[in-house]
Structure formats: C-alpha cells, structure tokens
Image 1: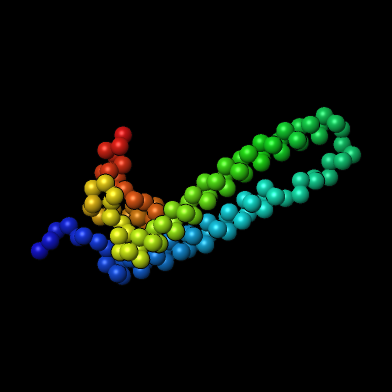
Image 2: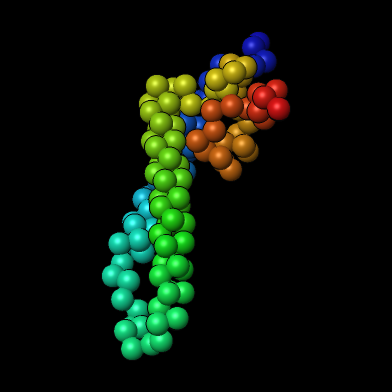
Length: 126
C-alpha cells in the first residue's frame, strides 16, 4: 500500500474547483470595484471651498489613485493565480508541491487555494 498519494482524487479536485471558482468570482467583482473607484469622477463638490482644502484634496486624490492602482495590480495577480490553479485541476496536477513533489496539505489549500508549494517547501526558502 502506498503511503504518499501522488495526486488528489477527482472528488477532491472537484471540491477545490468549486472553491476556486467562488473565490475567482469574488476576486473579479472586487477588481471591478477597485477599478470603478479609480475611474470614478472625482468631483466631490469642492468647487466652492477654500483653495487650501482643494490642495489637500488633490494630494489625497493622488495617494488614493496610487493605492487603488497597487490594489488593482495585486488583485489581477490573484485572479491570474486562481486561473492557473484551475488549469492545474484540469491537468490533475493541482495540490502537488512544485518543490518537493508531495501533496500540499488540504487545509493549506482551503486557505490558499492557489498555493503551489507546501509549508515544508516554503520553510526551506527562508
């Protein structure tokens, strides 16, 4: 009897696929929110306020745009990672550590469904 399974069962893969698709939908929705906030018409009704306040508004606006841009970039990477995880599910290579070749712990995959390395491999990197 083999102690280390080589891959997750089709039932497990189907469960992970459902989990990832749910996270993917939410991630796309969140990205749309970030983009709409970034593209939002920034007229906050400050036309008749003091020039000093307007200068603060513009500085805040720039920071907000930078923060939104960074959020959008991270969200796009997360979406790409989730899509790659779906490809690994289709190839039946999902959940296999790219460093050790062992199965990644199921609980880890539930928390980080796009993980490609086991905790053991992550710790070896440090």
